[in-house]
Image (tube, rainbow, N blue to C red):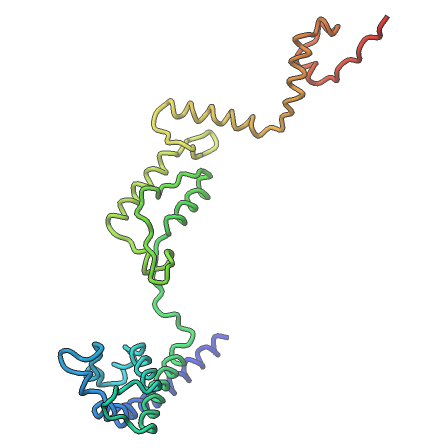
Length: 263
């Protein structure tokens, strides 16, 4: 597979040179004279129409850098909107040659860059991702980014892209504070470390943590409260029930005694 990729890259590089040379030649011999005849009179100078100065495009590379605008030029030429009336209009064949050239440039660039995603920006975690990561690592929903600025969105509306998730010095300080906050939840245990749902800053915090662990232990037990309430009631009335020596343990574990037969 690797040799195939290398071969494809070599072929692409081999054909790119002649194709670009041909496009450059067509730009010089066809496109530039067309622009000089029909476009430059309005689209040049210090205040060009539509802020489009065709004199700024002297090579194929200049066009490639600003291809979205040239795609718009091709669309306007296809629609017959440019040049505007009453300006002199080009012959349909000349118009088509320029349109074909713009499309040829687009197809060439698409083939040349096929499979290349472009620059992939390094990015930080979004606020939500950071909160989830801390929760997964500690087992506690600390949400350390609640004091962070809201994540900005890019023009498409996504807030998890490299261009929107930049890191500033002020935000870096926020991350350091968040790390300290997570560290404040750290608890040393006989078996290693754990994280409390509240900061562990003073001794009473440790007591609160220990009590909560006990409570959580009992909350996790499959307790049938009806059985215990019945045992408590039977223990309270054990004499009347004919079980004066009964204990809570025996009443909880043993089934209730059958009622004594009536005389």
